[in-house]
Amino acid sequence: MNPLLTIDNLQTHFFTSNGVVKAVDGVSLSIPAGGTLGIVGESGSGKSVTALSILRLVSEPGRIVGGRILFQRGKETVDLLSLPQDKLRDVRGGRIAMVFQEPMTSLNPVFTIGNQIEEAVALHQKGLSRSDRKAKVIESLSLVRVPDPDRVAASYPHELSGGMRQRAMIAMALSCRPELLIADEPTTALDVTIQAQVLALLNELREKLRMALILITHDLGIIAETVDSVAVMYAGKVVETGPTKDLFAAPRHPYTRALLKALPTLKTEGRLQTIPGTVPDLADLPRGCSYQDRCEKVQDRCRREDPKLESASGGGGREARCFFPYNEGA
Amino acid sequence: MNFSEIWRQFCKNKLAVAGLAVVLLLFAVAFLAPALSPRSPTAYDLDSILLAPSSAHPLGTDEEGRDVLARMIYGTRISLSVGFISVVLYVAIGIVLGALAGYFGGWTDIVISRLIEIMMCFPTFFLILAVLAFIGPSLVNIMAVIGVTSWPGIARLVRGEFLKLRGQDFVTAGKLVGAGTGRIIFRHILPNSMAPVLVSATFGIASSILIESSLSFLGFGVQPPTPSWGEILSQSRDFMDIAWWLALFPGLAIFLSITAYNLVGEGLRDAIDPRMKI
Image (tube, rainbow over all chains, first blue to last red; front, side, top):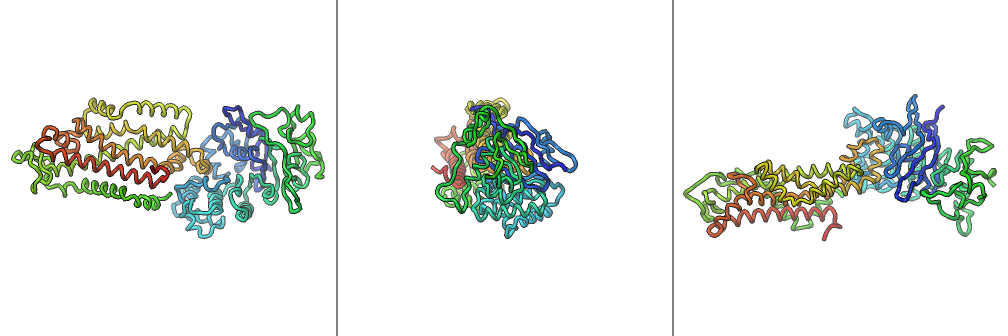
């Protein structure tokens, strides 16, 4: 069976006055229908740009310069990158929906919540009467467990709490029953207890509505709890992918390993481990592997050649972009 | 920022409320002109020319024996219609051009911005005067000419707002639910940029009224016998020494209405954006 969405060698570059910033440089990912995929990486690793590229929402000076994004639409497969604008609009919100990080700025301040959800409904389900649309709005809000949906529908964004707003965003995203939901750091702006609630809600809704979920975050804890498979991004490239459990148990790429080591546990004593150095300038990447300056296993070959994403010998759907990967968890 | 909050802030400003009261009064006068007016504004009465204010003619009569009060009352209609219609016209032009420039950027922006700059180079009043000299003065022409020459300020304002708003998440969110470009511009972004436009339009009404009065004073405005404040004032020039009422009342009316609109505009500005308070 074909995956629901396949990203094939996506390249999104930003043409700035300081040169070409390769924010996304040859990313390939796929997600099956109803599946879950986590994309982790630190700030500037290209995870959000990857998400925006899927729906061609990258704004100037960014441009998608290469690759394909294949989306399974019923029986046919379409390339979202070459789809005409009007067809693309059907996909946006209708088939693929997205939730952003900051629920304050992603809701239009001058319209009520109900108004905004209703618009999404009206754009994709033509021919519904006003009362049908209103019913859909209330249904969507109930779905995300908003207490008193009628009151929330009549509220303006500034009258709601952060968690409520994010629920409203999710309700809006789900109002047209998409097959794929992309959540870009959906809980970063929320406090921890609300975070847990929103994540649990997302997971529950995913199962209930049988949709696929791409979860973008820098929080490894969230990934571990929420998704089946994970892709680790670094400097615009995927450095390691695999099933979440295996990848966490035995990271193969030095970067993934360092990331996991930097996580505090209950047993952590003293200072937290950090990864030395910073992300390289994406406009001026070094020759060879992007991670060379921070890597503990760096060798001469890493400075000459850029490694490819290669499958692990043991299989199991694991891939790593490293000449000298760790073979065992130890 | 919602309507009731703005209204509450607006009401705190006593001068603005007074201004609004005057504006509403002017509206009432304009609508009820036939009922309020003691006699026809254009009826000649050569037996009673240039009479000082009295119980029969509360504001006196002009050199053709017409009742000044009646002419003033009907003049309100001219002022209000010029003020409102020309402002609606130029706000519409300004919004469309400003929105296109701000939203699309690139060449669209360059072309529209240069057009704005070219328009701003002309002293608007003399441009209006020159155009009216060509096409001939009439009420419709005045409104049209003010409308097509006064839009650059609004266009620049809207362009700035769009530049600020187009990158906001809720715009991306709008695209995300599948809204087209027109919908994004007019439904998602425009309502967010209306507050400063509304303030600017209120001041615009005042300046349009002033322009109309000035044009009428210079004889390029509404043509006699249609009564307009500027036109009454214009006639008073020849009789200034013997008929003070011909100059005082229309002058006062122009002064009061413009002050009222400006007070409302300032009150609105402070209520909408307290940071702009001086």
